[in-house]
Length: 396
Image 1: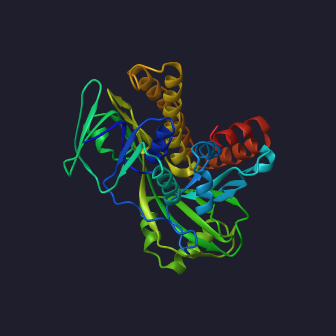
Image 2: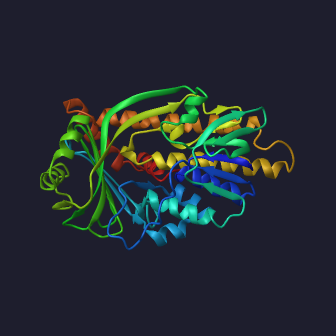
Image 3: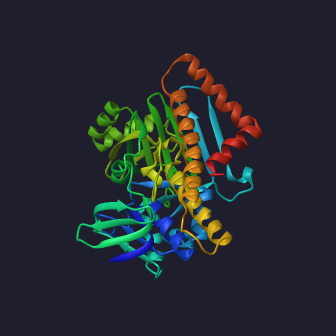
């Protein structure tokens, strides 16, 4: 039998971040995951992982607080100092420059595998943390004060709190019948690594095409980018069916040759984009976090940062509770309700914002094109409004 104060289901970036934050507060944690442990990334390897995240300054601050940021930098991370956003079908453009914000950078592009490995390495050093891979659970039951899990190998786990970080199709969310609001963005995202004729100069670029945004994210080699191309399912299928030469030409044409000739140097992967928002995040001693609670369109790169904000907020609430009361119930219902209310409100705001942007930049209606062009240029030239957008991008 394993006993801990918190059990986290899902050893992804969000679950591992929460686990490290908890043990640093003196809270015992068991993390379980049905998948095998990932191998350590090789910073000298030629290939980059296809799944990357644009970590905001707020996320960087969280990882610095947990003592793992330097490990991520040592493995592989790329700062970006400028964000360049354009609309292909209008004259609209907006640019955010770190120097204008009195900053050295606006964020970092980091491979998800690098984030996970740095967190796992830190957790391996923590006696209060147990991380179990190849350990799917079989049953979950709860009483008023405890949660009981049984792993498929028969091992029982007892915890005071269960955190579901088990992804967008969360089995725990489904087991506890937590309802979700859901819609299909009617987009598939193609991800790949590309090399370009011109260096990226630490610029994160995005162009809005009529059928979806295309992002070029800088990687730690001067001429290498990670792309995220969101487009219709039919167009995505056609792009995946192209040979490398045809894909390179299509990519360069859609990006207006901003970085010169393009060469895809990895496999191309595609996945459907769907909005999910859990209308209920709490069931007695079970809470949702990260993709189990919300998924949004990647056009602003906020998905990972939103999940990290979930973890940071719960850690903040637990730290405040332990400071104000040395004794009493661990993670009382009132505290969990506060977590649910606070994070639901923020997630709602970001979901609405992403849907509005997607609808505005989709299609070729002349009025929409005019609004996009005027709107982007207006924001770019009005300091207070531009600062508001910059703050959102920085995770503030």
